[in-house]
Length: 381
Image 1 (cartoon, rainbow, N blue to C red):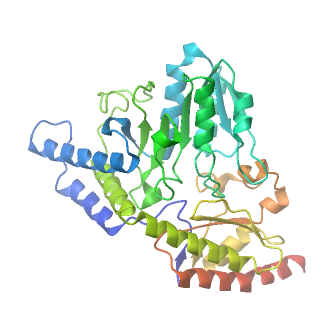
Image 2 (image 1 turned 30 degrees about the horizontal axis):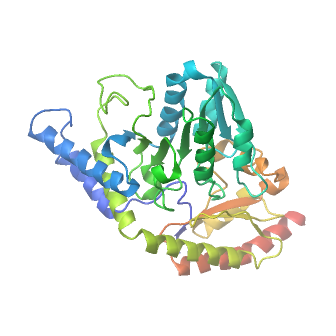
Image 3 (image 1 turned 90 degrees about the vertical axis):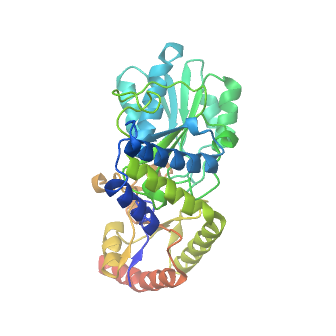
């Protein structure tokens, strides 16, 4: 049996998505900026995808800017805001549990003269709004806090944070990385109170290499790519029509049975956690999101357990796929939560999609029940 439980790294594209991507590459392949019929057909596909996405967000179509994915969306939001508002201040607030595409950006801006405050989470992996409040100052121009953590699945109080930030000053921009949230929990930017929001297509059964940035009307950001002036001059370059059309189709399918899928993922998540906790010493670090399970296996090296599960046809991860191959001392997210290096090295992430089944989860539990005691015995002998 093959069990894919690494859906936070990437998801398998829906068959309908693959079909529309292929069609837009081989049949309706015009440039949407061209004025002839082929160009108009491509432009129509872009508009249809934008309408679909905007509807799920209760947003205006003009508030959607397409990018190459979550990393570019985060870069555009943070660098674009910093450059646009530099004359008003130079202070940026973010958190220690952000994705590298946020943390490395603010580190870059710090080298460019910006001041950065990085907030630590509590022991459960949550950022307290009071910590944000204490960090605010008159020079603050941007607060960036992710909505769902990609490693442990904690849902951050972004709505409360945005409310207090804008209460302190309506001129401060609030950005959230919603890459692990969109399509998994309800996400309405205006209800959250955010000005900018990042999304990636391949996390919800869409193509890789495409995503979008929600930019609230009236929010000025500087472009980080320059060229032909596409997308209102915010993101130049010929639009990735196949990817965008595929993303639009993935969004349509995802939200056509959103409630059923999230309920199913929550059920599978609870089943996996309950089964794993029957093993001695195993601890769950999992947050509230319906699709992410973080389990700590004391006495076992996470990397060894990962490959042992792989041998059994079960695919999981040891943290963020974007940085895990470089990590030597475990997850920075878990370190920020106070997890020791030894404990950190025994943590694995199991991430679900609606494709997963109860049979797959039971097979995973049974496999863990067999291999974890054996690995512990081998390590201690």
